[in-house]
Figure 1 (tube, protein in one colour):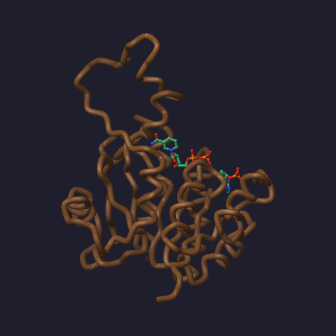
Figure 2 (figure 1 turned 30 degrees about the horizontal axis):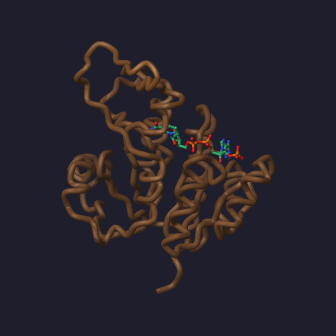
Length: 237
Ligand SMILES: NC(=O)c1ccc[n+]([C@@H]2O[C@H](COP(=O)([O-])OP(=O)(O)OC[C@H]3O[C@@H](n4cnc5c(N)ncnc54)[C@H](OP(=O)(O)O)[C@@H]3O)[C@@H](O)[C@H]2O)c1
């Protein structure tokens, strides 16, 4: 079987670099989309991980189309405001579609935002806006809904105050929260979907079947190779 080629946008970021590392470990060829302004040390790390560097901005559709040629999946781990999360990802998506890539993974890596009201969370509203474009595109996609990254508990979202022996909560101390580590989430990209137990994706698949146009659900495609233990995944054609 020929080497699987997977394009990773946002490869210089926290998630992107991890995804590249796990793809490399599984023997896939990661093509890292970087920009002229990306930090050279970050690009160097990607090279050492064995990634092919495609230095171009996804804002230029022709530039994103070229590295997508022959890829089995385009993974986006971009992070920014609306211009990046909606417009840049759309250019990347268009590049993937034009290049005939079968699957796209948007930069979700979040809680399940579909039940939220559109104005409830500004950042997740951009995820939803992009998802609406993705659903109309002629490409299969997988959205990774891992809950919150566990790393944030000690950093940007300090829910657990170790020194004070306290856990911060709002309203309800029994509110369930989903957490997954960044490594665990990134590692999903390095696994083959063939070996997944149905139960691991059943919740997401059920939702996907409700949402995806008839006949477009694709459970056999291994383009993304993801599963979740703690998080939830939405599978859709
Ligand atoms: N669930 C959670 O708790 C949680 C927490 C954090 C993040 N996330 C999600 O994880 C994903 C990745 O986040 P991260 O923390 O890995 O982000 P990050 O470290 O800030 O990396 C962002 C990446 O996006 C690239 N980028 C940003 N704007 C761009 C643009 N306009 N054009 C091209 N590239 C651009 C950056 O490239 P340069 O290096 O060139 O700037 C970088 O590679 C996002 O979807 C984010 O929402 C989830």
